[in-house]
Image (cartoon, rainbow, N blue to C red):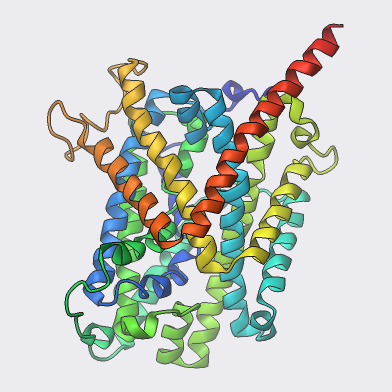
Length: 454
């Protein structure tokens, strides 16, 4: 069975791409991770500077992906770019990483956020945190198995509502909070903790920015990949950065970094202090809807990754099958759910955060280097968008944007390794395990081919 990507209808435009990226990026991280960031960045200035830096790193990645997407206007995103730059084995290993680490790890992490806010309404959810998170994963997986679909118009509406909710929360805080709040926190006496301690604070920030490249997975369905898609990627990144700075400034109007550190439901704590139980109910409802939607969409998209890899590798058998009644890849969704539940049992939110970060930025590094490899091969036409020519971040004749993106990606990888060596080692082992899996799949495919010929 081969997926016919070329037959997909080219109907997506500028605002569709913005909606996809903003809708996925602004999931639930901004309602949880500022508490993790405050563990490492202990002043308002450092915190806000960290969110700006995270936005700029995402913007660098966006510019690189804009060039790659316009060079290879095919559905598949990172999978396509790694396959073109390094060959089919690397594409397979990327798909294997998405299954074993990135998507399933993100499903588990979002399930924890869902559980933390559910605990505001149902206290027993926190007493049985892992069990509740597993239940959430299985519940939304079953919904997707039954054929839950979200159209482009619904995605646009949800993206608007998420952005509007963050803006409304910030406005309410600015209106009703009194005094400078957390901005009175004293500055630390020098960088005693060391550079990599502060750099570790970028990991949760970067996780909250995750998804800036998601619309490239449907590049083949865009009407204009040379102008509209690159511009929409940049616009989405800038919108998210502005909203994140706004909401974090609002948090700091109420809580100091010390009070924020370790908070599992920081938005709920802020509104509870300002409006009591009414504020707690408001934010709990909003975040449960947002986190439920994020969990559902992550399961929906993640379930298609093993399915797509199996379509390109017939030897993987039933994983590529679609249920006749539901019209969904049941086995692919089920495998993702089972592994996500294992990851829930294995770690907590912070552990999953650093576990997914290493693998994610390792492959982003490869994609950034791939820009240079593909340029050297002269595979792109002169008319496509170029990060080295079409942005103000570059100097004539020198590709500053990809260099800065690769450098930032390497730094984030090193930071993750130094801060979370066990999680990084586990992630590395899972990535490397994709090599024998790929060899086995290819051997099985060749064996089936011989049997078929005979």
